Image 1 (tube, rainbow, N blue to C red):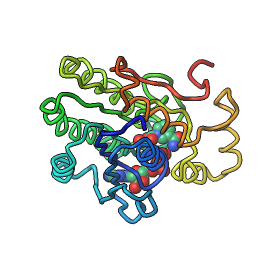
Image 2 (image 1 turned 45 degrees about the vertical axis):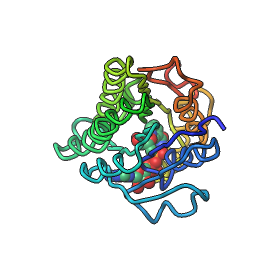
Image 3 (image 1 turned 180 degrees about the vertical axis):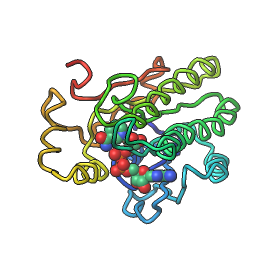
Image 4 (image 1 turned 135 degrees about the vertical axis):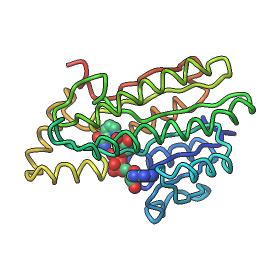
Amino acid sequence: MRLKGKRALLTACAQGIGRATAIAFAREGATVFATDVNEAGLAGLPDGVETFGLDVLDGGAVEAAIDRVKPDVLFNCAGVVHAGTLLDASDEDFDLAFTLNVKSMFRATRAAVPGMIERGGGTIVNIASAASSIIGVPNRCVYSASKAAIIGLTKSIAVDFVKENIRCNAICPGTVDSPSLHERLRATGDYDAALTAFIARQPMGRIASPDEIAMMAVYLASDESAFVTGQACIIDGGWSVA
Ligand code: NAD
């Protein structure tokens, strides 16, 4: 029970990394509040997990959720992938990437930090990506720019609140087997070739399961990582060292 006594608010839990993390947090004894804009997709999470609809683009709703939950652990997971180079991206694509991927974390964390200070501390875990300031990945221009911004946000929060016993870390996954990954593979027009290429780019010769990312989230949310803050924790099957 590595998270016993902790109240955790998570975004984007209908599928993929967010869902796996909600399940792992519950298994480790946290009081879990699992949210997603797709409220119906939250069905089937374990007994005891409280679920509710939350669109991270709705700043007022995010603040109300933080106010109600009073989280010790904030897991910011919601994100969108824009596929393409700089030349394929419109101003709207850029704005959506930054609003959904970065500004939502900024707002949620800004809402959560005062309560964490009052209660003596807390932990924030942000989902970034290896495709960021860590490695350049083809056709992920605005996505990678937004994920790099998450790393900057994470380090700043970590430094500013270290004396208040608040830790903030980012997880930087390589390719993870989530429902949206399969949509992106289908969108290339040749699913099998794209899957082969996505697998090949990771030296371990496979993609990650969402559960593997969730295990890193458990560690970063728990007191086991009490000396870890401001880090971009890479979990990518060796992609970034190749
Ligand atoms: P996914 O993309 O399959 O699912 C995303 C979830 O986010 C969905 O349940 C969706 O309903 C929810 N969501 C979308 N917009 C939302 C909003 N406005 N408010 C609340 N929820 C919203 O899941 P995934 O692939 O595990 O991605 C989760 C996170 O992990 C994202 O930030 C993504 O960028 C990041 N990531 C994924 C991979 C990968 O290969 N899958 C790799 C690195 C990082």
